[in-house]
Amino acid sequence: MILPGSVVGIVGGGQLARMSALAARAMGYRVAVADPDPDCPAAPVADRVVAASLADPDAVAPLADVADVITYEFENIDPAVLERLASRRPVHPRVEILRTCQNRIHEKRAMERLGIPVATWRPLESPADLEAALAAVGLPAVLKTATMGYDGKGQAVVRTPAEARAAYARLSGHAAAEGGRPLVLEGLVPFACELSVVVARSASGQVAAFPVAENIHELNILAYSIVPARVSPATQAAARDLAVRIAEGLGLVGLLGVEMFCLPDGSLLVNELAPRPHNSGHFTQNACATSQFEQHIRAVCDLPLGAVDLLSPVCMVNVMGEDFPLAPAAALADPRVHLHLYGKREARPHRKMGHMNVLGLTADEALERARAAKAAIRGEQPLTGSSAGLS
Image 1 (cartoon, rainbow, N blue to C red):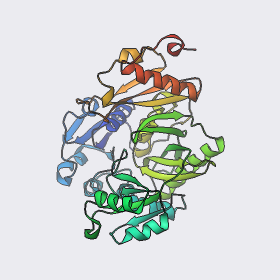
Image 2 (image 1 turned 30 degrees about the vertical axis):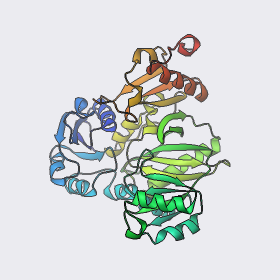
Image 3 (image 1 turned 135 degrees about the vertical axis):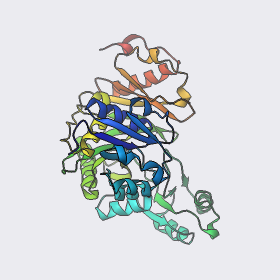
Image 4 (image 1 turned 120 degrees about the vertical axis):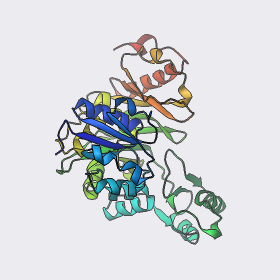
């Protein structure tokens, strides 16, 4: 057990590190962050920033000089960096889980070993695999890079063999005859909605799954997370059960975001995993007894986990670079809106700059208020009348 007063080290200094650091400091921990940018979003709330390339194990190694336990805020990290740190300090989630979640081929094979349902898929580890994969998976389908894809990057929907061959050449980085980076081909899932569950597990084996979020994407980037998800109680229970089974099966210590497809009959397919705090879990900051960030610190320090009760229906809405310049006062005219900005210096289109957690009496009302707050923060319309009231 790593007690308050100790130092939590975080590899990466972006918004997830910032919010994890805020939670850690509130619990009495000190925080050290490793990031190449000394003015990264986490810097103002960290006790120390180790300015280092996150691709260089030697450069990041000084984090182990000051930290008692180490975690990370994103999964596109060279495992050698974490292995170097893990030789001296506890690192959670463990490096083997990072490797699994970094590669869609490894991830799907791990899910199948655990008996977790996933979409029909085939690995494309060489050009010769494409035709056989098309025959097995069928069309339409989705081609995805095995590594480094996020927010819809590195993937393409294909509906004909010709589209699949062209997408293979583009995503693999080479003509099909020359090979290239590994890909996966997945059947296109006719889902009714997308769900996610953030689950925590401590080193002592205690597990807690947060309420299920229903996610709406725009331009392949998460736009809204609605909680409680507007699916049946049975589907919500099944989603949380899947997340717990994965956390236990992987031997997780820390936090895991589990993204799922909900089919029209209510059955579920697991899509992707993220071994860190998750964008769709931000709602917990203002709507749950314990935030995902506090829970993450509790888990990696092996403290008892906090309660995950939902205190109010809520909708999280991302604030993007294209929303700037902001009109925050307009959005905050609704007293149920809670604004969280990340302190990033440059606003770029499709870059996550912050989020709002918008409470409501029902999930539908929270979504309506969130859409109004989104329009208000862009300066498109003021929040007036009943939309701004407490009733």
